[in-house]
Image 1: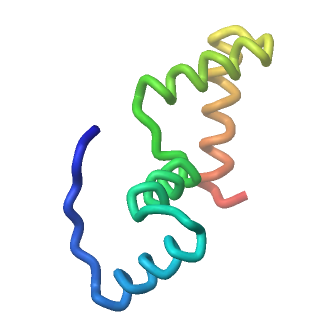
Image 2: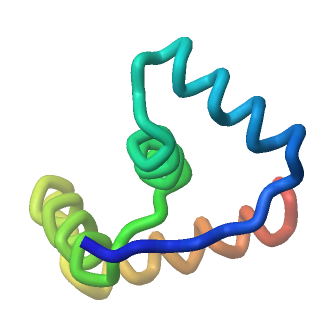
Length: 79
């Protein structure tokens, strides 16, 4: 397990401690859950997720890549 030091304003730190107390969680647990919620994953976890999704979809690697590229274009256009 790695350790991390961050700098927060006193107000943000108090709010974080209050949120943890309300949820019965440690600061580390709340931050870890938040990272998971925002999709922060290791490359290995992301690759595994893509592999499982592709296996379930029945798409070939080329079809999956084309679909991903189409979706990136849509998002970048804001459509």
